[in-house]
Image (cartoon, rainbow, N blue to C red):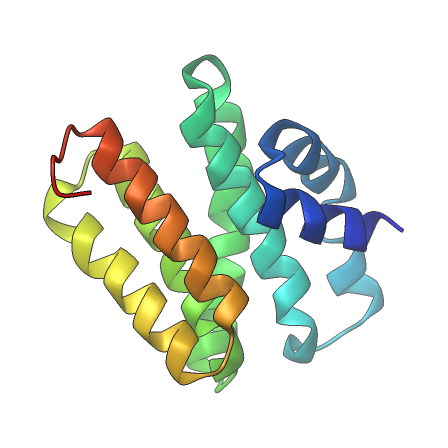
Length: 145
């Protein structure tokens, strides 16, 4: 149902639909399925929320506010040893750095997301991080993007 819809929205760039669905769902899935092993669903929600925050300045604050507790939860799980979500979490951190204008950290966070995702065999997240990083570089007018 909605979980797969969120996955598809994240990987096909349907930010508005996916982020709206992510806000509506909240952490209901994580609450039903206790434990950090279900962190990928939480990571997808975070990716959708920051993706939408970057897409539309008029709703940036709303979606950034929704992404902040998601990012915090992912970071807690990583601290407890859930390494499978490190790549997507770095992607969310990179997107948050873009939103917050933290230019010094953006490049390294995207690159960490890509390398961690590849190392951990999550090629779909590496691809998404490449795409989002390229989009950022193009927005910034980087001629080498």
